[in-house]
Image (cartoon, rainbow, N blue to C red; front, side, top):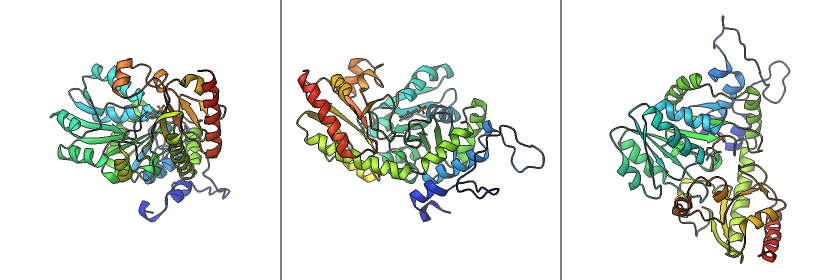
Length: 386
Ligand SMILES: *Cc1c(COP(=O)(O)O)cnc(C)c1O
């Protein structure tokens, strides 16, 4: 079945499923074997070869959700990202990355690449010229992440693709924040799509996993390195992820709706100074987001009015949990200045527009009125302690 002929939620529920021939059960059985026959078999299976029955089943679903030909599932988002990068980079090569990247990806580049003689340039993603200016004869990859963390800036995907194609450069995107519900980069010309499945694909804050999707040729190349790096995911977790993705569309569409309502409400709120959400007309990249996204996602950030202590506010929340991670069905909040962006100098944070009182909210699927009530009661407590 072609992706165009079958709806998103139907792909989520059915594509790739393993038929239970023995008992006719409704869901994919789970195969935990690490040992398979090697004689007279069509495929030599082994979990680290990414080809167990459950891995193959889930790979089909992911490939179709992202409109790719093939997919591999990894033990973490960083395993997917690092393996995919190293599959296409060698000594003497150069890569261009947008500066506002997930911290782990940036650390991988700055802490490891020099050891392998790989050159890199970080650029401001708000203009496409900053990417084209850095292109050299040895540039092999352009790597972007949109929406970005924590200000939800949007990178112009088709514009980046156009530059890269002209110079025969591979494009990679970290599509974690958008999820395949809201953004399908391959349809916009991107070569390789990466996910931390720990976030929206898993969606219940109980799975650590990653995925890469692309053409069969690109995935074969990544596989050649992946089997040596050994970052595959256990079949039990693969099966949990398959189960989680059945509700991906339902969850993320609800999170989109809650985030938009919350963003609009916060923007009008007398105790909130600024709201960053690509679905708001006031967001600097709103028009671009409308062009390349199908929904604006569940992530938003905001600053309290000066005089209100964001850490008192955060501790006063009762429903919304403090959390380092994101994208679960429960709403969570963090302060980028003391968590995800703590390693940056205050000047570097300032340069990226990340104020010390900025809070990043990952919107869950609770009733939005209950989230508003929680925020209001926390603000009231913060006001009295100021
Ligand atoms: C969490 C995250 C990652 C890393 O994923 P892990 O599963 O923690 O390895 C990469 N990119 C983005 C945007 C993330 O949010």
